[in-house]
Length: 75
Image (tube, rainbow, N blue to C red; front, side):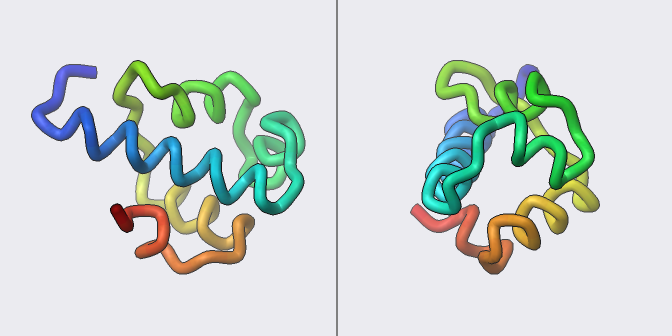
């Protein structure tokens, strides 16, 4: 994905990974809970590529991780 916000996408993905691991979820288990594939989760969490998600998916991710959406964007 070509974007001027590459670093923000990557930081978001790393936050998702942090909270997922904090909850003790594998990528596969987390993917099931958000209704996506494990490869989707791997793309979101990748530290080397920017990968965006829809607002619907963003809200589902926050719900499953039990954090406010804002936590996923904190620096």
